[in-house]
Each structure stands twice: as structure tokens, then as C-alpha cells.
Picture 1 (cartoon, rainbow, N blue to C red):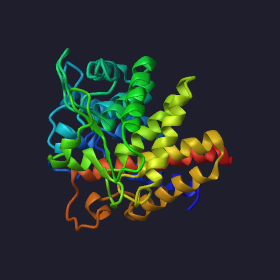
Picture 2: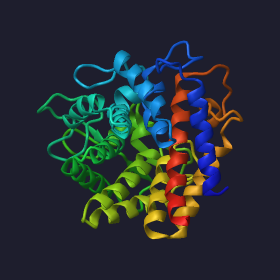
Picture 3: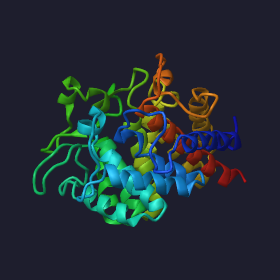
Picture 4: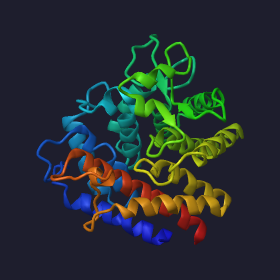
Length: 337
């Protein structure tokens, strides 16, 4: 599969979402829609040339899920409650900015910015009152960092980048595990190995199907940050995350590999090094290999399990894979062309 085919599969995913969108921005064939079905859609639509659909989706979200404080509720999944709360918020900031919906982006950004730890530069894993201490993690921090870059908050993005470099430097290059979070007092959160959020907090480098985006999203964000900054330390940190992913079992062939592939595609566009192109397309082949014939993805089937009816997570993963395929293809084609 080449980059042009990758783009075509992204468009197929976008077309499926468009076909299932009602005029009010909600989804058809989804009897119990959750917030998780909507937060990636505006960015995916904007990238694939469907701004009207992005506006309709954001209209629906603003009417049904957005609070006056710039948050988005209710949250029903553990991943969006306690693992990395700000992940949803960051996507809404980015997607809103992509189509000029500042009445959504600005309140959402203010809520997000209030969740940055003044000491470490990381972003809190769960909402934390001003002045209080809270745990931080790589996913929340990298997602918020991308949102900061999208809105011109460079200093906040730099502090997030410093946090991601620091948490990596604290851990041995020969360790079998990588800890993705810090405790409120600024130590590595090794106790999370026994918690309900273990999958997001401890990466077993010798086991398959780990939470690769806990490494891949920091990698992609640091590539972006290096472009926005004259500091070479962010390039060094990005390369270190890439090297860590290379040590893993199937970091390029898992359900959560797309964010790292985005980072690789960007590095290929920037450097022309073919290893990054090959890795990005390797992930793209995995994603396309699980796409249904009508263009969408079913998360249960991606994970090798049966599925009977459409669920909010299927709209979530379809928007996500549409987004990553589109980003992979566009960066590679920019260099190849």
C-alpha cells in the first residue's frame, strides 16, 4: 500500500461518518450515543475536506455536552474519567480551531490550561482544583500539548515538552517497563501497576498490544514542538521516544499505533529518511487491514472479538483511524510529490 491508497482509505472512513451524520450533527444508528462518539470527528472531518460536517458535529456537541466552564460531560468510560481526562478536551480544542469555532475552542482551552501542573509542566490526569496537587501522565500532557500548539500557547507547550523529556530520562534504557505517570509529589507512579488504570500507566516493553499511544502521542507532539521551537532538546526527546518504541514487541502493529505513525510521517516529510516512511506505512497497512468494506471500523473486531451492533466506540475509532490515515498520507505525499 502506498500513501495515495492510504489517503483513499481515509476518505472512505470520512464518507462513512458523513453518511451516518444527521442534519443536527448527531449520529444515526446509535441508540445510546456517548460523548466518546464525537470528540475526534471535527478534526477528522476538517482534515478530509468536510468542514460542514465538522460544524454540524460541533453544533451538536455544544448543545448537548459542553459546559459553561469549557468542559465536556458526561463521561461514561474509565479511560475518559480517570486514565486521561483531558484527552477529550484536547481533541475538541484542535478540531474547533481547525474550522474556526472559537466560541468552543477558547473556553475549552481555558479549562485545559488551568489543568497544567505549575511545577512539572505536565497536565493532570483528572480535573484538579487550582493550587492543588494532582497526578500527571504522558497521554494527558501530550494531547494537551498539541492543543496548546494549535492555539499558539507556545510556553505551555514547551513546559509540556520538558515534562515528557524528563519522565523519559528518569527511566532506565534497559528496563522492561515504562511508567507513563507521575504522582502528585512528582515521583514516577510505579504503584499504578496495581490499579484499575494499569494498562495506561505501565508499558511492558516485552509484551504485545500495550498502550502504545502513551509513547506514540508524546513522540508525535515532540516532533510538532521541535518545528515550533528552536530548542533541539525536543528533537532529541522525540528520537528517544521513537527508539523506545522500536524496542517494543509490536508497537507498529497494534490498535493504538496510529499516533506514533503520525510522528513518523512528519519526520519523513521533514528529513526524508525512508525508515520513517516505511514505519508509518506499516502502521497504515495494519489499520487498513481492519477496515470494513463500507469504510468504517468496529473496535471489537480490531481487537479480535465479535461485535453485533454499532457502539459509540465504533464512531470513535472510525474518526480516529480516518484521522491517522489522513495525516500519515498527507505528510508522506508532501515529500514524495
